[in-house]
Image (cartoon, rainbow, N blue to C red; front, side):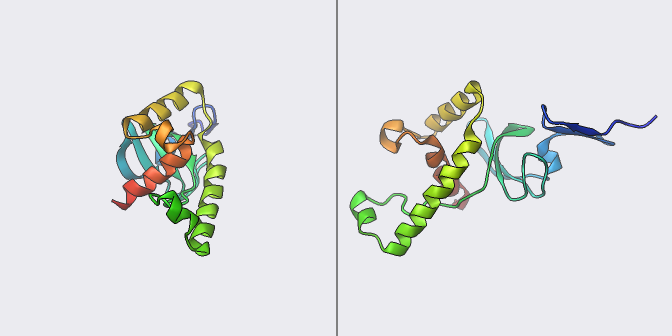
Length: 152
């Protein structure tokens, strides 16, 4: 009798001759930062799998990522006062604009069910995200936060 093979896209698992595998295993994902948010690890896929491509980041509680995205790197103008941003060299402003465009593309990867999104925002707030101070784009805040944490 042959063992079943095939994909179960609903559960993001793949049946192989070795059994059912999660996306972490299928992509040989590595941890970039443990507990980047309470209960979440930041991981990077080392090879392609359906739903998570090589070099993409994943925010994982267990087994499969809740969110997957391409890393745009750190925000070029982060931490600069408005006056300095308004007077920054054109080259730096262009890098900032390009970074913002990349993050806008990434934002669609953070659309999920209400509970997952609520937990994501709540954990971001637990580590310092403040909509009144940081604005209402939690994804932009989080992408920059990840870049800062990876650099440390």
